[in-house]
Length: 92
Image (cartoon, rainbow, N blue to C red; front, side, top):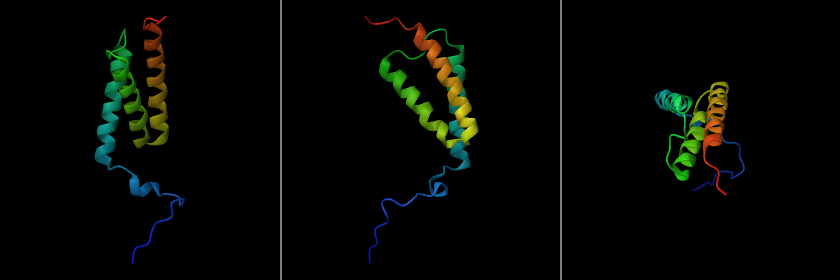
């Protein structure tokens, strides 16, 4: 007999939590990306799609870390990206 799960039930985070190995890999990637943007004098990615892809990658990967750590890294990344965006030539 097939029983459909409740579409509106609250999902348990523990079932979807990544392994410690995955968290370690994501943490390393986030720190590498953060180091890249902190050391960059200009946007390190060449086109708008690459910039958006890296921004999204960082935004979603930080959620695998403990909340306080992920939020801190995101704030640092966002500040550096704002700095780099300000250096882009304006279209107009």
